[in-house]
Length: 213
View 1 (cartoon, rainbow, N blue to C red):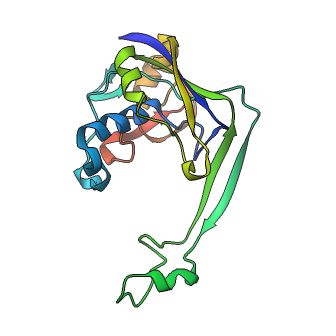
View 2: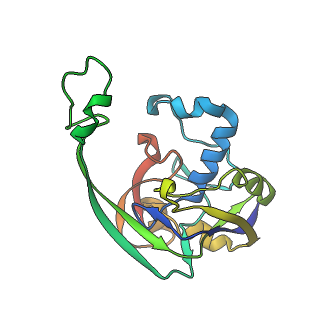
């Protein structure tokens, strides 16, 4: 396991919902699981998922919890960030395309749920993460990934090249969301919030109160 700087060179930046994503362990986990399961990966329900615990990244452990030694993303040559709020609602012009027999469209839950959403657009040349891991294995897995973040269909997050250099182990281990008890034990303070520390981050067993970088 070596400290490694991973850099994704982008076409025109990326879109995420917060400044702590996209996470490199999440991206690597996606590549790993897609290789293992193929197309079946896309039909797994959350109830069938478990934390991905076999990535080629160093694990940190404390009081029964574990997480990967990898930092939050850092934009390179950023020219700015824009937060955008938008609304999603069912467009009735598409009702003719619904499956036969659907008599009512539920907009308070399910696939047609109305929502007010937000995202952050970061316009930059590249994005970087520090990781302690197996550089060759990471290079191999990330070679399968050509998009990161959201809004990939309109060109955001398109990866031109993955680059790998010597990294900083301290940044990898400390500049990331850390479980509250562990952060306090090593003297790190900051904003607190619930966060999924291992992929898939939305699983209940992945979430705990963290100190954010």
